[in-house]
Amino acid sequence: GAFWQITDIHYDSNFSRQPSPNDLCHSYDGYRGPTDPGIPHPMFGDYNCDSPWKLVESAMDAMKRLHPNPDFILWTGDNVPHEPDSDFDLFKVFSSMKTVTERLVRTFEGIPIYPSLGNHDVWPSDQLPVGKKAADFYGGIYEHASWKTMLDGFHLDTFFKGGYYSVDTIFGLRIINVNSVLWYKSNKVSTFPDPADQLIWLEEELQEIRRKGKKVILAGHIPPGSLARVDNMKWFTAKFNSKFNDLLVANSDVLAATIFGHEHTDSFRITRDNNGHPGTPMFLAPAVTPWKSTVPGIGSNNPAIRLYTYNRTSGSILDYQQYFLNLSAANRQEKDQWHTEYIATKDFGVKTLAASDLSELVDKFAQENSSEFDRYYQYNSVSNDVQTKCVDTCKHRHICAIKEVDYDLYDLCMSGPYFSSSSMKVFRRLVSFCLNSLCLPLSLFVLMIFLYVVFMRDDQIPIMMKNNNAQQREKLLIA
Image 1 (cartoon, rainbow, N blue to C red):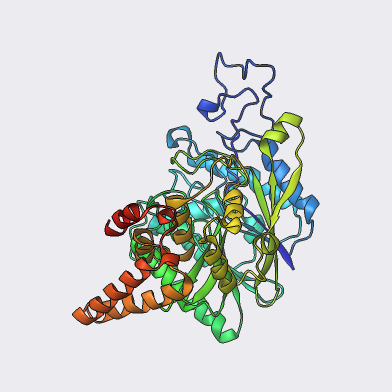
Image 2 (cartoon, rainbow, N blue to C red):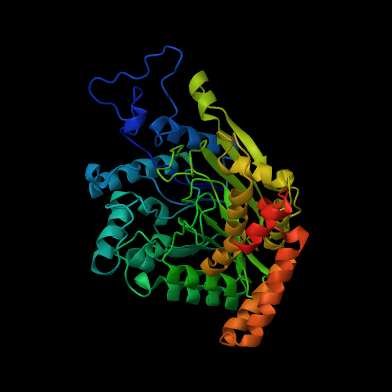
């Protein structure tokens, strides 16, 4: 079977065909667009701004044209623009989401759509509520944003409590949609030990699925782990990242895949157990909006949509086809032509998209002059503005973000060389032994010997160290 993922639409109803790129592409008195006749008005959007309605419709129409009858659609959140809270209110949030919802439902009439809430699908942004205010907000999404057209008939007690739910497909596969914004560092109203009891619910859901011998695809908006393009950019509060990751690791036997958005870039991650064995693949799809992030280093992207092929019973992701719109060309030609950017198994040269095969792919990424990594980095921004190669710290950061969802292990990865899968298994065992033994002197001694050997092995020296002379290498090793 096949299903679509569409994410981070960020529809901006105030987008103008005569925009100011420095003002979110909104028009204002005295501004009449580009004065150079050779610069077109951006019909389908601008890399500095969120999605005009023309782009939203273009993405949905392309999905319908390219694969009109998917088994279902995962719509993984963020449909409201990146506007200041002072320019918005809850009514505008509901209205914007309703407009997008009704267009998607109308385009795929009769096709199940499983939506997730994003951190911008609320006012003030990021502050998804729990407790007494939760029912009013989530009830408002259900009624006023027209989500009842997608969720009607589900068991929705958990949705009205905290914006999360599960549903079985007609093939018996379970879809779990978590509200990961409740664990977001920027969510200051979600201060409970287990906001909306979502973690305990998730644990019970996964146990039930195991008892029934079923499999699950888990979806949400914000992924666990760290952003690959920026130093030390971690999404969840540390305790929630740890608890959620622990659940994913403990239930990798029933989790076929996890699927998220939020980052606007194209990447993946791999959960691992304490021995370093790959667990569950995590796929992060790029955004429809081309908006250039305000965070330095993230940049902008071409608009994107993704089609997965999967096993309807086991939920295993067999492959995916990434489609994109070259925004510059579309605006220049005033014509939207969505193309295949890449096919995952073909372009990365992997047999499957199982966690074990993806782990081997990341080992190839770490090799010097890796063509696989160069392709990955091009696709990371949806083939937009790839002018320089990603090497040294840049490459190291991507590899660590992919391999280490756990914050502490990510920090360890970033502070040292890149470890191959075999070395990392030994390293994890030693770290676990050290911690479980309260860091007895013997475990520390063995750990130090291991690190010394790994650092001094030439094929394990970080990419940034290679091609340097012995003196530079010595400085780096000492540092």
